[in-house]
Length: 275
Length: 219
Image 1 (tube, helix red, strand yellow):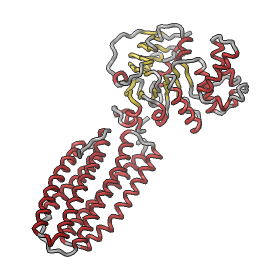
Image 2 (image 1 turned 90 degrees about the vertical axis):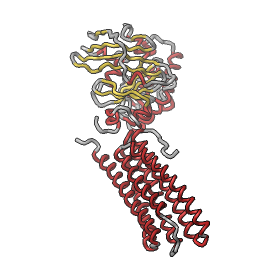
Image 3 (image 1 turned 90 degrees about the horizontal axis):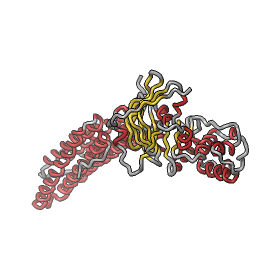
Image 4 (image 1 turned 120 degrees about the vertical axis):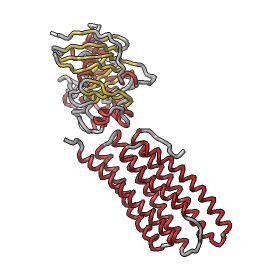
């Protein structure tokens, strides 16, 4: 049973850095206000407020257990699946409060997710990518072929797999599998893609390929990525949020976070003094 | 537990090398000027030899800084510190070259009975040495006020240098037979003025380290 409950918190926005430093012209895709999350009695997120821009890459960094993955999972309500999770505050995607709607399937279509380890189904490459669209009721072979090809191209893996689409996806290398996972997410035509340490199980070259892919994908998608690799955050993201003990300590342009952070705790973390 | 202990100790090593470079350069400037005053050819020649040690230190600093960038992938203050070390070592190396140029002026003058006054040049040298110490203190101890002070002191150097130029050219018109000696002193005046500019660049590196943005302390 899903015991997630929702408490509305209508208090005024706190003047946190995560709300004040965004000055670009791009539009806000995701707006989070005073988000608190509890696992039973234990509070995991404290008054998180952040505006995530459309078609940008936003990196979430911080030491283990700081709440960054927990926060990421609130953006497509993955935490609903965990017993005892309680949330208050507000998350709006395209102005719509995602915790007000009961249509979680629609939300997860719009907000795709890629996990730490490639988690392809034990079926062919083609069927993996076509899985979501088929579940949505698309039966037309031509249409499915088109979606599969576009998605695999979008994930920069088409040339490597186009001649073996009907073979098992599990025969691919880890890096290839992860890009097929990204293709599978793209196939649902999401607006937002959440990535939870998407390269931590990959070799360095596969990691660079996925990073290149992220750079290309941001023309079309809003990407939020959790990473333990700070150089990766520096390479791929436009903005970076530093989490510590369930709070956002600092949120700013990535170049600022890694060259002249405002908060000493951010400085200590990015320079490897703790964490 | 100190995280990144070996990185910390490498940064310390970088700092020590810069301090050593500074110490050697100060000694060279002092020796070069005292050789000029006393027409000590041997002393001037020793300054020329000592320049190699400063050049070697610059190379060591650059090598260590580059390796730390590759190995540690520094960010934020660490990165600014390492970039600063590279820039500062280059400035100090140039300053040591000016000490060499002053020593060469001594060699050019050889023996001379000129009565041209070098007191103001010595005053400029004193200000420059103090500036060098302050600029590096600003860098290593993060004291922005010292960096700004160095910028102000450079204005004083420029002012004195202009004055020395006027005095020496006037002296030259009255003592054309001392042309070689006075022209060399004019060169020394120019070298010291440039030393002030390079030290101001060091202060700008210090300001960048402290504030994370570029300052022009020598507008």
